[in-house]
Length: 119
Length: 119
Image 1: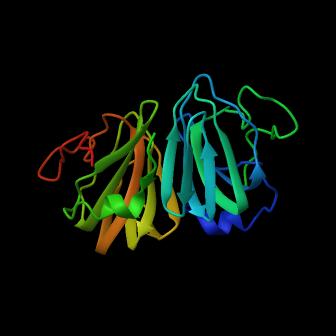
Image 2: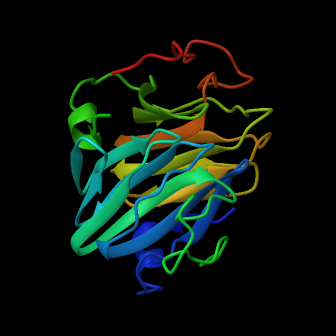
């Protein structure tokens, strides 16, 4: 029954592309992640995925368009849709998705992060 | 496939205690609500409920404690737990919960808002 402060949690890590779980709601998790540079093209076969920008700017590339997100913007990537997040400068993001979702979805590789790491 | 800006959505309504849906992720909804004054004691039998403070300050009273939340704080109220949100001054909040959850839970009454109202 503790409140969670987003900025305090963000101060606890500095690595990129490695989501940290800060809370659970039913079988969903709230994660914070710092991103910089390009991620990999991937999709999540069985779930939508929500991005909320806490600080900075990021882009999500899709096959036919690119969405630019700034602080206070959110975007729900529909399940199965190929996307590639990237950020020129460091961007701090909250991700909301079901427990167990792996960051690289169907594209396991160097950027695949450990799942279910709490801070 | 549109991004959603929280402040822009918040500028579209002014009533209190009447959550507006801004996005869906699977069978969950993201809602914005402006609150001021006291809500009713209630619980949600079958789901957790997440509060994220976008602007202002609010409190959530529980049987044996009161949690004070400011901008950038979040709190997950566990399912079945009696709680009463309130705010001395207007507070702008994001609520995340499954589609279909009614704002007053088990305590239907004057403050029960229409469900599934999108902005």
